[in-house]
Image 1: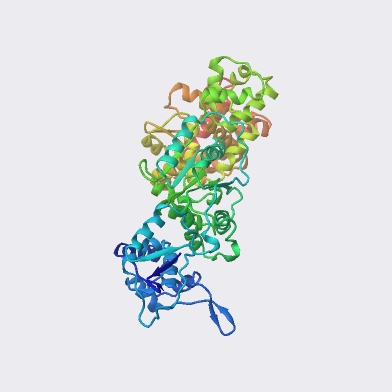
Image 2: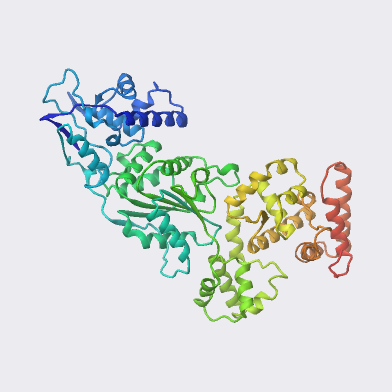
Length: 592
């Protein structure tokens, strides 16, 4: 856009009073984030990237700007229009919202015919939209007229979609309520950042694609991209900007600095209403780290999430993830423009439709209900189980469900699904998960804390429970903590394997830190602990040590060695060894 005043081209611009306040806020934010003092050269280096080339004797050269000009800008004094616009870009501000349109000034020493290009380097807003119309009205009051500069970035963003490698959702089950909620939040309430969270296999990806397809007509552009292979943030930003600019901006002409690429992206999100979906965001998080740290080199995603959530714009970014990024947690609220939708399982009707698509299955209504509840309506898990029931149990739900409570079924596909999430847990998070699996019932916070021996774990328990909840692995009902049945089955098998290994190798850890059997628990809990934990451990060990007598000797050796080496160390090892030994001597009565 070129600004004209009574036949002369405007040379200088200054901010309005409100604009100056926004400049100071933006400068302070960047100073806190990057540690740039007001006179650091980085401000000038970044601004120079947005200045037009200048002619010299041999051709064109990059323009530059001085520290005095930067300080005049911060003080609200008039400066050259190209410099004004460049500094606004550095701060992530739209110069048209900052400029004082009623006091445009020609600098001293300038002739009435001097020309300065103040073509807006960010994407041009669509004609007729509020920001441009407001700017025109203000400028018209002082005899200023506007015309559209013929630059590549001034073209409209056309209605278009780019699905990337989005999955096929032509077969889709349920989620009517969730789709309606997302539409209300994003289309009606204009939320700018939405987290779609849930455990692996719950249907986050398919829901994000289905929603985008249903509302794409509400947006000028809809883009879906997967983060599963953890692309660098600069690559993702370049891709998004290239699509939104209709291929006019490419990685080659974008600044390498991540912050300025984010600024560029936000300009597009302001000027046209866009929907962007980034799937599998947990892939950019550091596995086994506390406080939801990003993988080394991926911290820029945190800045992207934070700035998209904090900055005013007209678009929406949807993140799907098993884990809630800390930036999302800090910004979300029920009535705020940043919100989170946590997915739960499918209803029984939709869950049964998954089986019907694979064939005809037989079972009573109660058996169907028990099966679906065991897998908490997880679509991917149910799809895997349906194949197993069809291939192994002759499509009989009854034959599968009868032993379901008596055994912890270990299907490879489901184990791999959960393993991906469990590999991302810290050691302390795993310790809490093991306790919840051993207790077999929902616990109050105080009860869980009383069982724990480790002082470090006791101290950090509130934070760990919060993290496990954000990682979609913990259920909280009326202040009670527990695991979903499918997760509990997986953890039980994991626990049995680890205890077996510790006894075999005499390398003790869980055997001392966790109680395998609670004598004061309800009868039903004790019976379950014996049947699903202690007995499977003994059965495997009897086979490994070729008989009960050899296993008894191993138990005695472990207990004797521990008491000799660690006589004052608190723990559960003595009780665990005695309970395993008593069960071994019970001749299959499953009593201790």
